[in-house]
Length: 269
Image 1 (tube, rainbow, N blue to C red):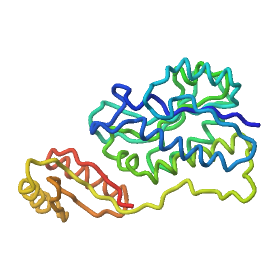
Image 2: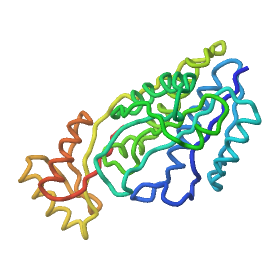
Image 3: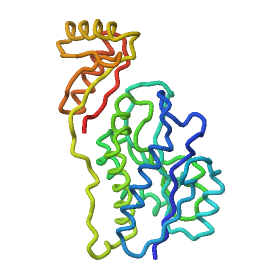
Image 4: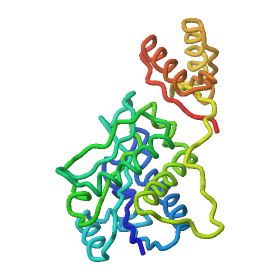
């Protein structure tokens, strides 16, 4: 029997753990964790222990979480998070996974099984497997990792974090990485879910402006200056459609450089 402990990081109301638009990190984390649970339950011989509050109402202390996992005798621990930089929108981007400081061969192997799968599922920059003095990976007595599945304050990453399909794929990716690490076998008849998302079209948008009329004015200026075909909607200016994230990012940077706006990217699924 493989005993897997995990948490969705923080709580729904934890101060500071949110996007500049007030979207809560816990909500992103929870969607990943629930997809991870569903995929793990398609494997034989496992037990699951979630150490945070599944409702998100309480931010369970880290010491309580690690004590619970240690007392239970977990074989591994995964803490799911999403990153932030300044708390204001910017173009930093990427996925990273942490183990504790020093030599931790089993934790490092778990990270190597999980991390590349998250990168692929999210379609974001690979920032690597790193070491850091974090309570959740330091105080657990079993192999433990902490994942950061993208930046909540990134105008690049937020398009993926707002996509339930990408968050589900991230959860499936983590579960499949755990399965590789622990040598888990699928239950009879269980289907292996894809841990990737078929990429769709991307739109770049700016706003909010004071009125639809002001948005229309700005749309015309952007179109005339950069050659795009933007249109006003709901006091925003929408530019695109772009077939790849890279081309959307290029448009985002062009608009920011020429007009001083802070555009965001949304994926159409």
